Length: 438
Image 1 (cartoon, helix red, strand yellow):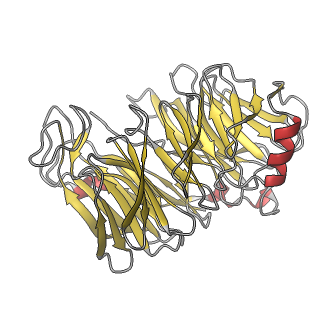
Image 2 (spheres, rainbow, N blue to C red):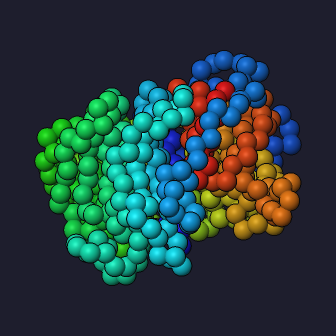
């Protein structure tokens, strides 16, 4: 049985001027769907450089990290739970486990490891323990039966200065390490059950953690002190994702049951938005994009909870959302096998990519991630396989945003992928974690 945490897709800055204008002028306007059959204004690059210099066309596989070597005594598959890249783009943290219910697992089948991105070598193991289910000697880790238990690292994040690594564990604790010395600095205790999500404020002062005990806890990260506890609605703790606003004054919790907006200073629940599917939030916490049951994409003002804009056009469930780094473009992909580029300045559909994946599969498209310079969009795609005895193959399609064309396809076995902060590397998770360099 495979258990993974889903990473939340986070977009980037959209100015407050745009927020004020759009909230007053188009409080619930739908953008008519258009087909990019005639030339449209192309999305601009955040860096202003010509897309003809897109270095991903000649990208090379720098390293392939075989996580199977972490578990020499295991005969099960290897699954990555979470991964994070340090702000200086030098370190990759990977949480993984090797477990199948049929075999019951083996000792030391769960780890949190640190890797040098440039050399592809592992230089530290911060956590090594057991991954199993249902029964585990000691403290109860999950309410009722279900979920992985043992020594599982569910969530990891680097502090903004890159000096510390923070992890939420299945044993209800949060651990903090010094990245340079790999020394454990402190352990935060307070949750009753496993910690499934964490977020660090942009100034590095506060930590938010959510647990299957149905609470969010706010901590002083530097001192390791609990500030306050926020109560989630029933069923909200298991799959919660947390995001701070850029000023650190708002916290957004994303669950299967909906979206909640919190005032960090008072702990007050500001607003609860309707249940939706995928979500993307600008890091300043001003705009939230949601995929909805009617196949539309809605934009919400995080400060007020007011719906600002509805984007219509998809003919199937919206699977992923991503803001461009300059905040001008929102991309969405769907089970209808299309990727749409929405211009948030003109309120028009700039471009639609059709037949991107293999339509015969249930999920032809998965993740969407912009490169930091905004020139390249990475799209998780399922294609018909050219490999013998394999029907489908997962690839990352790299799309040149300015030129409007595919740069190249990168084969991968996992839809968990991200660019390094410096934009020079692309990491694809999985048992064979790949590091590509432009």
